[in-house]
Length: 296
Image 1 (cartoon, rainbow, N blue to C red):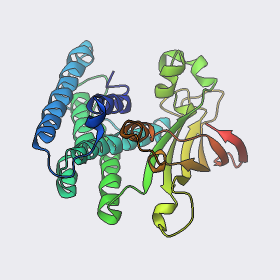
Image 2 (cartoon, rainbow, N blue to C red):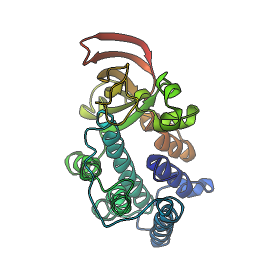
Image 3 (spheres, rainbow, N blue to C red):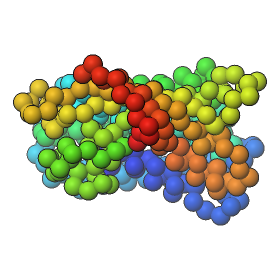
C-alpha cells in the first residue's frame, strides 16, 4: 500500500494524528510536552511499522539481491518524480504541522519535522535497492530532497508556505488499455494513471502583497502533466505519442477561508493538496494551445 501510494499514506497519517475531540484541534501557544512526546512516539511507531509491514508484505514476495541502483529518470515523462517531490513536501509539512500543534518552536519544527517525508521515502528507496525487481533510484532521492527543500526554503525565506504543491486528476482512456498498470477503477487510476494526473505549484497572490484587496484565498497555479503513456519507458512503440502539458489556472487556498471551527481548519489543511477545478490554459509539446472551461 505504502509502496504504491505514499502520499495517501501521509494523508491518512495526518487524519489519524488530528482526529479527536474539538479541544484537540486547538494549537498550543507554548510547548506542550505531552503532545510533543505523543507525536514523536506515534510517528516513530507508525513509520517504523509501515516500513516493517512494507518489507514483510511487499518486498519479500520478490527476489532479493545485493544493494544496487537503477536509472529510471526517463520513465513516465518524469511524472513519477514530481509525485515524489509532492509526497516528500507533504510528509515534511505534516511533520511541521504536528509539532506546531504541540507548540514546538519554528526552528525545531524545521530540524525535526520538515525532513520526515524525505527520511521515510529514502528508507523505501533502500528497500528498493535490495530488491531485484526495482533498485534504488537516485533520481527519486533527488526528487525527495527537492520536495523537502521546497518546504524548508519557503519557511526560511518567508516563514510560511506561499506556494503550495497540489494535485488534480481526470480519467483517461489509456487506463482501459493497460488496467493492470494504470488502474482498474477510478480510485486506482487516481494513483496509478499518470496520463490523468496533473501536479501544480499554486501561489497565494495575497501573501505576496498583504496590503492588497485581493481575496486572501485566491491563488494562481502552474501545472505540469503528460499524456499518451502506456509504458514507463516512453520509447516503447505504441499508437500514441507521449507528450508533455503545461497549464496556467486559478486556484483556491482553502486554509485562507475564514472559519471559527478548528475542525474545519484541520480538514481544509488536510485536503488543501487538491487543486480546485477552474478555467485553465494548456500549452503542450505537440505545439497546441487549448483552453479548458473547467479543468480537473
